[in-house]
Image 1 (cartoon, rainbow, N blue to C red):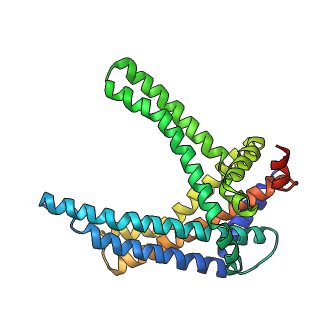
Image 2: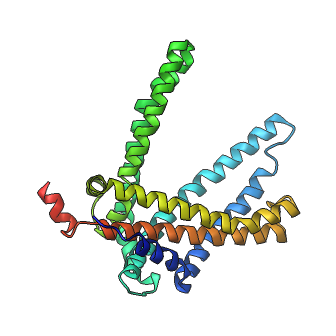
Image 3: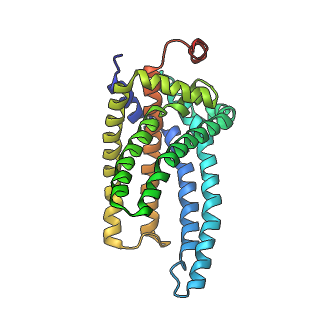
Length: 281
């Protein structure tokens, strides 16, 4: 299959530049950043206390705050992802709709998408456990032969986990776009990527190069300020400037990621509907 990477990434680079799209993502990310900043400064200040009991207590406070916050942030991220995936899908097809018009899709796909992500993580965790528990066991045994075995098994494990991640890269996007369940989304991703391994590999390489370039370009101002001003976690003008710059970076890169992957899936997806393909199987 011939894939027009210029069209895929051209649309993906332009999509975040839309005012309505970027504004919505920026506001969401700014909320995340400000809350994280406040919680970090409020809880991390005394973690390094001289008194060990006090330090341990502060660490527990950090855990109590950060874990629920991470869960809430993850749930919000799962909810907003369908909004931008559906909107970028329309943009790729030449429609310029406001992203808020896709909120109904977010409500509809929240639970299926959450289940899809959970199932993918469960598969990866299962593979990780099967492969790396023997590695940890061999390491504790301490014998040279076991160390060699652990090293070889580590390489195999990394390759296997990376391959599974590669094959399931489209699961969440299929769940949103095709409105399939968790199992069907994962199966479809495996089949579609399996038939387009070379194209998918090229897509990931190009995506990675552009993504790194975006980060390097937008991180230069932050790094300059950090070097000149020092501590950037304090509540200061310097910290605020870096917070805004990193939020802009995070917003653009997140939109670029979702748009590029959506465009790639729309390019390589089978002409038949996903339900028809699954029925044939």
